[in-house]
Length: 471
Image 1 (tube, helix red, strand yellow):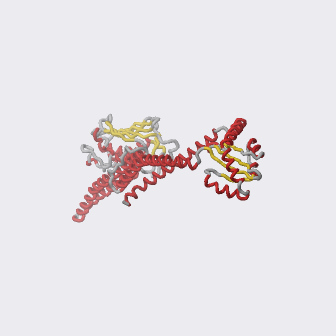
Image 2 (image 1 turned 180 degrees about the horizontal axis):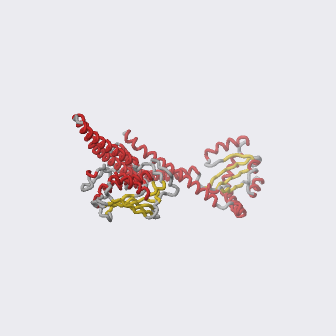
Image 3 (image 1 turned 90 degrees about the vertical axis):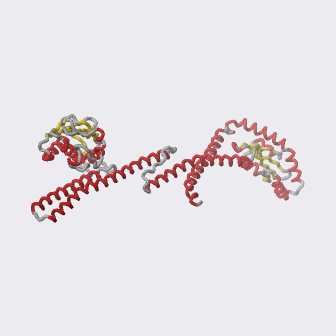
């Protein structure tokens, strides 16, 4: 029971906040309506003659209506000694539903009375004054001068229901209004509370390792927007987790081969007494260590370019000069291969020189493995951005395999396989370099007959080009 009550506590807080807010709004609206109504009523000063005529007419009518009452009060008091009048009036008060009191004549005449009322009181005649109080109603003051004294009996009557009567009359209606308001708010807040608790439960399950947990996206707004945002975040986290698991499995697999060869070479070196054979084993071990170093370097580069990494610092890059330098460095690995560069004028690109060099170098090395006789690089620029394409005349890439080629540790099954070397990270690094440049990489059929890998990225935002890189 206590657990269920604790689970409903957020609903209670939301309900009472909304209830109190709407109630305050209703009270303020009613007060504003009353204020505006009182301001819209024409003041007496705008039509003084009409107001005075109405007051005189009403006063005469009230004096006639209360003549008998005034006569009875005067008769009763004059039958008593003057010093007992106050006690007699005090004894009457419980039987009157309005105030009645004795007041000195001078005090009454000091009031802001109409001329007719002041004239009658000066002549010791009973008088009635109809006094308008705006939206609060009208008030009638009955004055009865007592002969032979300076005392007046003053009665104050309010025309219309008293505030207490109004409150009592509206108590049931007000209660019904508050109950209906509460039920309406409960009907509005309960679905909201239900969807919020479901979203919280989904988030809790996801945090405990259930990466398949998803929120109900068809919830009412703004909960629906929150649910869709959560689902997008959950998809990204699940995808990243799956990529990490796949990468870890692939890394362990890639490490196993050179480590196994190292162990085997060490075993042979221990078992042999021939110096030439031992030198051969040492050369093999050096190659295996170099392969491990290459794999480590590629992994570090790939992880630095993750989705949430800081943005690159852009700089001016001479693409034709960069490609020419890469040709010079990499041509030693394929001396019989014809390397050709096509540049449409001076291509002064923008981007991270370090990572563009790594991406283009990876593409050239990749094409060198599969090209039969020729490799061509073409660089260009336009108003939108920059393009680099690397073509080879090798076996090409089947259309069904082209998207998969940019996944980490991916090799194709035909001629582009393990025999060509590499760890399957080169094109994955290229893909992430383009993502970091807000661009993309694409594999198509090259005019030479093999594969064409095209890199495209936009120009940098205004003011983003600097002279260095932050990674």
